[in-house]
Length: 183
Image (tube, rainbow, N blue to C red):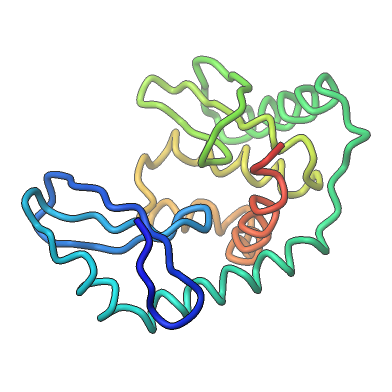
């Protein structure tokens, strides 16, 4: 759906879900307006939140510009990438006295990795193009979920013990995501 507010036209996706309150999200540069069933005041909500939308889109544009300065490693082979992750995880799991059920590599649409309740870790193959430090950080992040499932204070304390600068690493991952999400 498009709405003309100032210039240029602002395009957003209207989604009705079983939610109590309307909300705006910006995902992958797209504006999503999520409304409760039966709600039809979408233009009013967009108009009321235009400053927020404009600010977020401007911030995203600045991030995209900054992301272009990040270099991707196209020389690392699939096998080299898998070996790097596997070796790092084997050493860290031994050091942490933890066990993982299975590690898989797959292309993921919206995350760098995941850890299931069954102790299966999935690693996004798009990480292959990033610096070693970021690859290792993501692997550690997922292993930390073996100790703490949620992203709560305890989880971030575990991460902080190994990566005190994890917030900067998370920011870098966000920038790299803008580079590799189309690969």
